[in-house]
Image 1 (tube, rainbow, N blue to C red):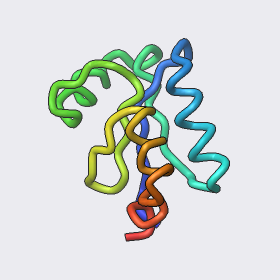
Image 2 (cartoon, one colour):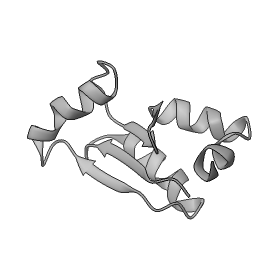
Image 3 (cartoon, helix red, strand yellow):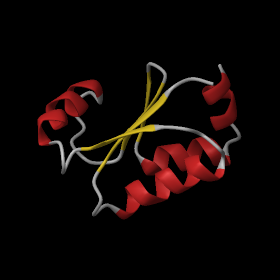
Image 4 (cartoon, one colour):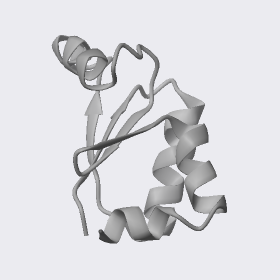
Length: 85
């Protein structure tokens, strides 16, 4: 399984929803809390192509986007293949 990294904030409902989906699927992920670690936010913005909102989700080297994009991949049946590839 590819490594998964998610940039989050504890105040973000979309972050909680994205983490819940990954957890339900049994996916282990590394979480970067940009509220607790504000020095990591510029890194997130650069990796996400300028996106400043959380969550920002990465599967391997692929930038998935946010919670909506993650759930869209799941609905389309493409998330498992992306995780496994």
